[in-house]
Image 1 (cartoon, rainbow, N blue to C red):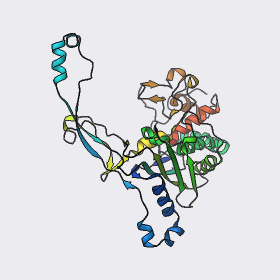
Image 2 (cartoon, helix red, strand yellow):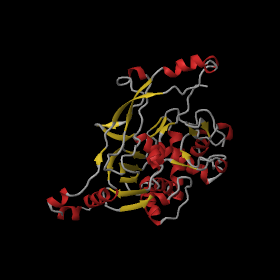
Image 3 (cartoon, one colour):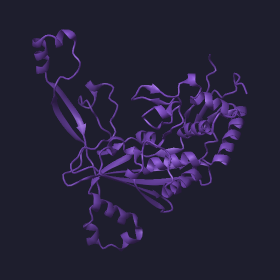
Image 4 (cartoon, rainbow, N blue to C red):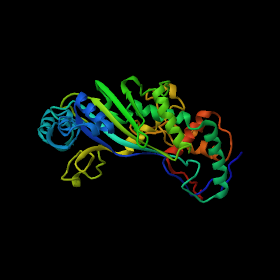
Length: 365
């Protein structure tokens, strides 16, 4: 089926169906902090505790940002005239490289980082939030409903569940941890899963773990509309070591000269408590794309679902339109009822729609 001008809606948008909150960071002790939180989650046990017993519990405390002023050394590449002249080089080295930066670390008595956030899973991917072409909308709706009835989001849900179980959302905080535990709880039913995240790889998307599959079934049910929505509460505990640095999200600084007194690094905080951006957590959860060309030859493993497979820190677009595997090429075929080459292409298209975005076709050439 050839795509003609006007087949695709000019106004076309989809709301995201995985909606994470910001992640809030706490410091605690591995044994005492996890035990106190477990008691607090168990309403019956919590109500039976005496006041003096509650006072003895060690609860996680919100982490605060600290400001540091440091005198660095010159370490950038120098011009040939400077690096070949010892006098000029010495003059450069003598110049102070003064910096004011934010930092965040556990307290002296704390050895564990706790990260808490919620994740809402919504249905309705077959219905665009904005569309100005009724003919296109009906064709797309038929294609999406066929995917939902045949595939039921089972593959995508398994990958989202795996990214919760492996704690990919901790990013740099995941590196060098001695122990790593993820507790996922369904808010309205009390169902709960506890995962040892060190047992799950972040390089692969295959798993037969029964608890991951049970969580995936809940996610798939919400995405496909069998349940209205799903609200998950996620608590993660990473044993990183006493007083070790931890890493909240870093704010984008466009003009360092005017940024809160000239700080060169500003970390994210909510009411003075260190936190991670919801966008950063969402990026980790949707890092499920193993279907892009040359995946087997690329050491990065899964990449975040993006229309062009963009990985900004590497400066690479793994789904170049020349390969005909970018989102728009595949979506235009899928939405108009054309059969895609592989089921993997369908999974990818639906994953981008779960991500959400504006995908209309401009009427201008």
